[in-house]
Image 1: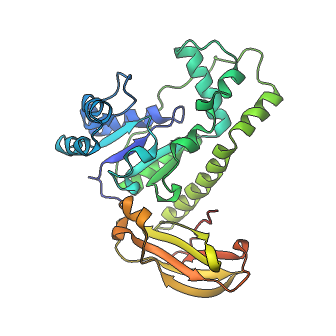
Image 2 (image 1 turned 30 degrees about the horizontal axis):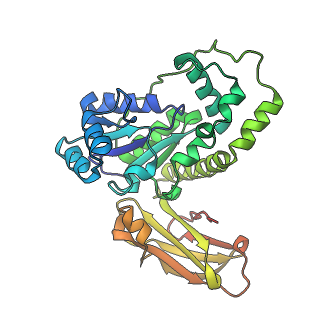
Length: 316
């Protein structure tokens, strides 16, 4: 369980129930305790964010002011990498949504609030609207983020978040598209297929996050600890990876399997510069490596947390 005094950094991906979550944070902590970064032109952006981030471009002074103000959260339409060197990755949370439904919802929002008068496909094919979720979550290992909720399972997500972070964030919905707002002429199957094709990376992301969410829910129901981590196949037939548990200093014990046969056990206690820069537990000493027998395929290899039998995801 995360310390309930830790500030929460909320990357608000458009049309993923982010407004509901941000408003819930404001209700929980108090409006002035939630700092906002919605861009230099947005009236929602907090004044000292504008001053230090957009005017002076001084992230260190921003962090000093954030702490001095005793801010409880930072929320906004920013990529996770923007503040990833200031706050631990386990303090970063977000929500994602079925990519097709998210595009449709954002299109309706732009028509309703921004006067967009183009077609759905004109909107969907604009670069800023393609793979929006994976772009905003790029450059920081997905498996290191503190929590990723699912819009389609919003109530369940908030309950799980509250349990992990020892909070009591209320559940309510805000900024929902009117039920009567429909797209004139409907959506053809070819347009739907095109939107799905354009957002292939977001669908891969969505599938991966769904697996993470199911695993965390299962472990929570069993009162077991979730392990953040991943592994990949490196040169010279080595596997390399990292693993840690939130707020725990003990190294994670990893079992290595080839075709369901145990071939090795090790501790995730090697230095990993990426995880250190993301302020992981153990000051980045969360890595591991293992020499595989020759000609071992990645599809044959699995890495399992000894304590819980949780499988670490393989990342290409």
